[in-house]
Image (cartoon, rainbow, N blue to C red):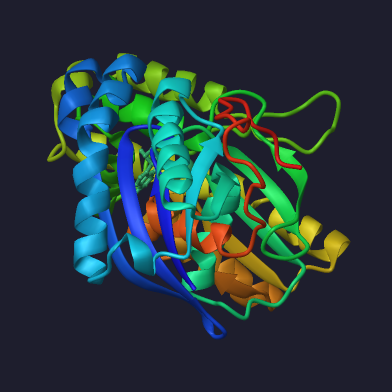
Length: 339
Ligand code: KG4
Ligand code: ZN
């Protein structure tokens, strides 16, 4: 079965052609147009600009993906598209296009939850993943830990109470004037550090419930920058900036992985999936590998281009879901819940 996957929930416009085989999904083509340059002057994604840019990019992105895969519309067996959550204008452009194509071509059409997409990116690395699995899905908008019964059924275990981990990366890069998007730059800067900075204090929750919080970390970074004159303009080559980036990503990786041992025991998990844009982070990948080895969990972290938003993960999830009976009444949902 050949699936065309489309994703444009935020600032990436991506289409991919994936062949679903008995051995797992095979990526035939993937095209992604980044909007980094468009949003860089604002230090973050401007929703209205992003949606308009998707409208301009979508046609050529789909056309290129089909051309690289060497197939025409007739060869595609179904279209999978992100239904939500995300920026509503961005979702709507691609969702409406997918609906129209499906209707015109008489093609099965599958709406996909964005986070189910991030989980299914792991099918490209370990298609025969043993379940149940813990799925740590971390991006600019999400920091969620799920128990996955299989590739399409998730139960929430823990999430952030405030900012997503990706936001802590992006805001730190912004405060240090390092550029946009922040995660990859902070990662690069941290890898150049010869020493780490002073540790950050972990947040404590009075109600004792399992959760993350990253807003205090952001404030912590702000205070450290304020206490070192000139740091905000010192740039990526400055050892103090490098040390700050290093302790930031060491801290985020440590906090993200902290609940894994207890939840692995409590849920009988056999595997650990780490996905979403923040899963590109070199320190998180290293710490996750060491932790999974020590707990005897099978680890699945997609290659970086499949961790960030992309059409391939949506196609991989869409291959396992039931197509919508009638495309027309189904709509994009900025706040879509996992059912
Ligand atoms: O999954 P994604 O592409 O989009 C959302 O669904 O949000 O994730 C984007 C996030 C951004 O916050 C970006 O800074 C972060 O992923 N990111 C990273 C790295 N690469 C991307 N964070 C830390 N280290 C990286 N290497
Ligand atoms: Zn995402």
